[in-house]
Structure formats: C-alpha cells, structure tokens
Amino acid sequence: IQVSSIFFSIRRVILILGIEVLVSGSEVGYKIGNPTNIDIKSDAESTSTSTAASSPFPTNGAAKRSSSNHYASSDISTTPIAALSPYQNRWVIKVRVTNKSPIRTWSNSRGEGKLFSMDLIDESGEIRCTAFRDLCDKFYDMIEPGNVYYISRCTLKAANKQFNMLKNDYEMTMTGDTEIVPCHENSDDIPTLQFNFCPISQVENKEKNVLIDVLGVVTTFNDVQHIMQRTTGRELLKRDVNIVDDSGTMVCVTLWGKQAEDFDGSNNPILAIKGARIGEFNGGKNLSLINSSVLEKDPDLPEAHRLRGWYTAVGHSENAKSLSRAGGSGDFNAPLCTFQEATEARLGEKMNLPDSFTVVAIVNMIRVENAIYKACPVDGCKKKLIDQSTGVFR
Image (cartoon, rainbow, N blue to C red; front, side, top):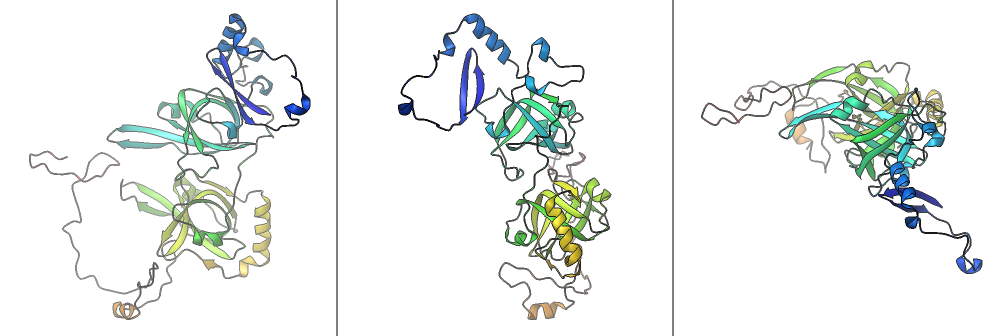
C-alpha cells in the first residue's frame, strides 16, 4: 500500500495512492491487531504532532540543518511527483533540476514583473515549477541544472499544455513560504533528463505549435542573423540548423539568442532537443527552440549512438527529404519565372499548399500612407498612439 500523510490542525488524513488486496477479510476471519482512533489521543500528543507538522522539514536537534546547508535524506519523508495534487499541501519532493529558463520580464497595463521556470524530475515523473517577481532573485542563482534539491510549500494548478509538454497534469508555482534545500548526498536514484523522441518523418503530420522531442545529425547550419522583433523593436539573434535522422527526413531548427550565437555545428554533431515547437512556413514544417527547450549536443544516449552509426555508414551520402521550405532553413531554390508564367501555371491554387517562385521585378510604387505611425516611447512597447486632438495622445 502507498500512502501520503496530510496534517489538518490536530487531525491526520491519509490519502491512499495505491492498494493491493493480498487476502480477503472473509478468508482471514478475524480482526488483526488492536487499532485505535488517532483523534482521541492525548492533547499533549496532538499538540506535539501539530507543531511538528507546521514545517515539512525536521526540527529536532539531530536533524537540524547543518553548516553545509542540507538535510540527511533519512530525516525527510518525501512525496513522489506523481502523488502531488492541489488537495494536499504538506509535502516535500526530492527532485533533480533538468532545465532552468532565463529570467524573463513583462510590462503591461496591470504592471510589470519577471519570472523563471525550471523542470523537475524524480523516479515517478516530472513537473514544471515557476517563480515570479522577488522569488526570482531569491532562488534563481541557487538553482543549478543537474543538481538535486528538496522542495516544499509550492502551490499546484492545472498545467498549460500550450507551453508545457511535461507528462504531468499539474505545474507548481513558488510562494513566499516555498523552501528549497540542496541535497548533497548520493542521488543516483534520481534520473536525469528524459526524452521521448519523435522521428523527424512524423513532424510533417503534426499540428502547428505542438512541442516535441527530436534527435538528429547536423547536416548544415547558417551564420547568425540579426533581426528586429516587430512588436518590441528589440534586436534578436537567430541561427537556422538543418538536422536529419534515420527516417531519411530533414528539418530546419531555429536557435535563438546566446544559444544561436555560441552554436558550432562543425563535424556533424548530434543534437537531442527536448520541447522544440513545430512551426509552418510556405507549406513546410520547421522547428524552433523556446525558453523551456533543452538542447544537448552529442548526448551519451543509446539512440544517439545508433544514429551516429547510421549517419557514418549510409546517412551522410543519402538525399534526405526536407520538410522545411523556403525561408524555414535559409535556402531558397524556387524556380525563376515571370508573373505571367506564374499566373499561367496557376501557382498558389493548390488545396492548402502555397507555391514559391523567384522573380526579377522593378518596384514602381510604394505606399507611404501607413508606413509610419506615432508610437509609445516606453522601451519595448511601440504600441500605436491615438491623437485625442487636445495635444494629448492615448
């Protein structure tokens, strides 16, 4: 039987997480032991139990936090990730951090703030945890991907599957009471990053914005590009990388920011990507890394070793089918034709599929009426201002 204890004032409630009947009561035929109601024990014992339950970490002298700022695992009763639910709040999880996002900021009519998230894993499953505002400053620097921590006193809510592909119906949010304690003991029982690889050939049939794990060999990679984000006016760095797997299919993966700047695709490295987002362009499919994505280069995985063997033996000389069309990978091999030839060929009239072509043309008119507008001067806003005809803009 698996149980998890929860304390409510002086009462203890046990949630049964799993049970297996070994022998039916009719076969046993008598009561085993001498059970008593825990609620009728002495007030002193109940008070002691309530006090001990006020903190998820042990408070006795032998188990207090040592100078190395950690607890012995034998002192802490932990709950598996798979057993967490919004209906219990007295728990401690022992988890490994598999990914930590950069700190992101936001500013809107309701205020401004910042946040970061981290992905956690134990032997039972995985879950995402997010910190907002002051908690970013409190915990960001102490969290190191790959390390193991004891975490308690977070709230749980339904996971937003648009941005969270982890196999958990819930995600955690830190609060002012959240406690995070490093675990410096042997934690080989806590797994590392887990992948659920999708063959590149299946990307073609998946919906836009779906998050997937993918494994591939780098065939080509472009130089870093500097582009301007239309909504904020910020300069972004991007790099397009083409990868192929043993399904004989190639797709373009877009890297952003420092990851794009630091990437080196020489010698055909193998990339393992967790949480790549599927995009569409010109009727083709491409992949893009987002803040929560994890990229590992030449990972020590059985799947990666098999892929390397395939690429060395036959993959490097095969002509792979590309899922990414013009613009997705930086290559543009569309045919050269005139506007009349494109019209006569009925390009762009296929069902749900656009066509691409190259044309040499002269620009004879540029509309300037809506080319510029008065914008909010706040850095990163750039929203259009409305003239109130009173010398004031809204």
